[in-house]
Amino acid sequence: MSSKDNTYTNTRTFFLSDDVDNESVGKLIWGMLYQINEDNEKDEKDEKEKDYKRDPIKLYINSCGGTIYDMWALIDVIQNSKTPIHTYCMGYAMSAAFDIFLAGHKRYCYKHSTFMYHQIHCKRSGKYQDLVEDRAEMDNLNKQVEEYILERTNLTKEDIADIREKKKDFYIHSDKAIEYGIVDEVL
Image (cartoon, rainbow, N blue to C red; front, top):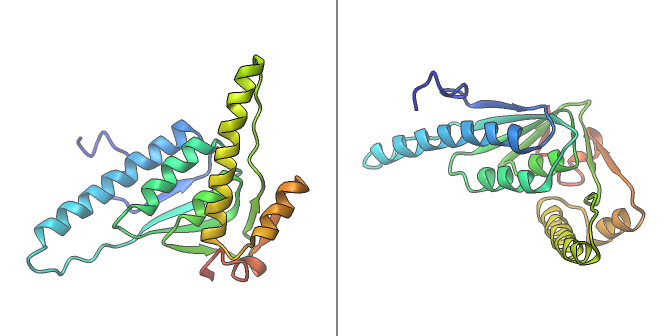
């Protein structure tokens, strides 16, 4: 693909300010994979010299979140990248955007950044069996998200259970973000 066809070519800075959905995540993944692939090719060429150093890709986030399947797609790209991807919270990273933020190899926020975690949200309708099958999928997704939060933060199982059981939105401001293991540094 030529550089004219890809608006993300030759850049290491990306911005997520939309809802987390197929379109916004698809564009981010396209751009990031393009850059990661360029790094992989340079790495292969310089393998003999072993001098190639991958510069980090920066992902700035200011989003209320969105769909869980699209969230996982972007998280998997970030976590499996040999090129370091650093996440920056500007304003807010909530719900699915919070989970994406946590995928960063290094994570930063600013003084006025706000994070929000809550249990997954779903709206379903249909016949009884549809709802039974959807419930099984929602249980699976909720378990995956809770395990991911426990792996990527200092939140405890008790914290997660409390958030789920009280159906609350858990807001974290920059002054507590390091304590909870959410950020590496407040800028």
